[in-house]
Length: 254
Ligand SMILES: [Zn+2]
Ligand SMILES: [Zn+2]
Image (cartoon, rainbow, N blue to C red; front, side):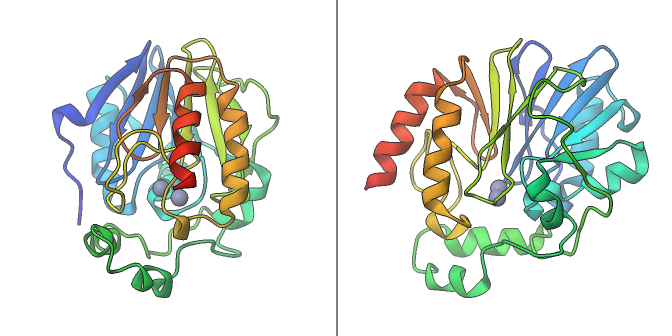
């Protein structure tokens, strides 16, 4: 099932930074002239929408200098390998995420875990959509590269990786200090089909490799100086990371 991009799926959240809503997952385009850094790539079924989103901001696949990956779940790396091959763009991630992206192992919610939660509102529709969008497709990144450093990368937007393990071992957020925007992937989201809440929150427990580490990792996001957060799922949050993290912690206790 291919997602068709709608006009309001591309949101300008900061200077030359565009958050794009895929069929359920976001990706971010950080533009610098006629080139860009792309953070995450949506589901495999979001491929056409991804290309359309580049076009919508005046770019082409050849504009992609690098693909940064928050983590290697299918809904975030669905087109990473296709872009690597088509654009000759490196696919970069925290070194602990590299074997996951190559599918040496897979840290993903199991069918049994999903079925155990099937009584919850939203879980079955989410699972049906995830399957249709390629959530269980085999889409490894064949030549993933470890981030060269955990400080500002020499890429459009000069993103700074922040290791935020827990959702997966090598999960990384990327902060854009010049634009005041951290891109938090699945370390902090603002909505999800399996949640009835809106606003800053953790994904449901079943989605995390290590939930207590995911809670601890919020400390790194809390410290960031910013006024907007670009999450992996849900709309951008306009407010201070400190406030967003406080909300996540309060909700995580309930
Ligand atoms: Zn994930
Ligand atoms: Zn996700």
